[in-house]
Length: 150
Image 1 (cartoon, rainbow, N blue to C red):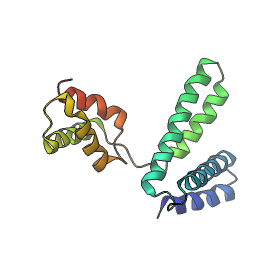
Image 2: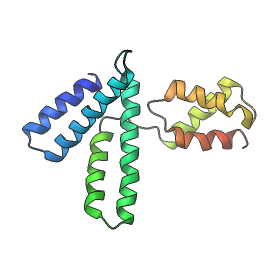
Image 3: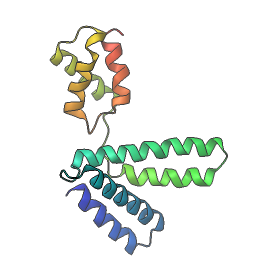
């Protein structure tokens, strides 16, 4: 089932369950998806990888908001944002753990034949090409740098 279909199905279920917080978050996701599709015009609608990237961006911005709300002493708003993050992350693929990420970095370094930090871009491109959906590139960067002796 595609993510677009899952959003619709989950919205219906949440509406029937009268789960206002989940309905609100799912409506926000579908609105953001429509905006992303409109921005992609005149080309085709955003594909699954684009939707996953959009969801990651939404989760990241909410995580930043949580930190700011906590600094300002607004726990109720931080809790609301965390609930939205939980709904958003329920649609994201499971992230690699550190051991699997290290193995993927080693494989990418071997595949590209990189030997110095100057070739970090090639390794990162190989990782993004193979593992974009399940690999946190922000964590992979320092691992690649360390592996290449940076």
